[in-house]
Image 1 (cartoon, one colour):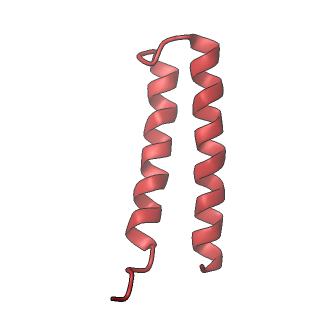
Image 2: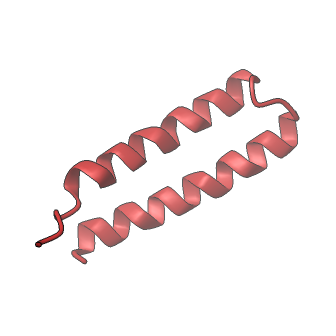
Length: 57
């Protein structure tokens, strides 16, 4: 795993934890702040997926 991949995974985990805290704070999955954090997490997951190495078969 490259440094960039590891850094992205760390950012994904932090964003996931922040999403959980935001949802706990606002109580609704449809609250604008929760949706905003969910979008940030989605973007990081997409970035990781695009940049990860493909498995060799």
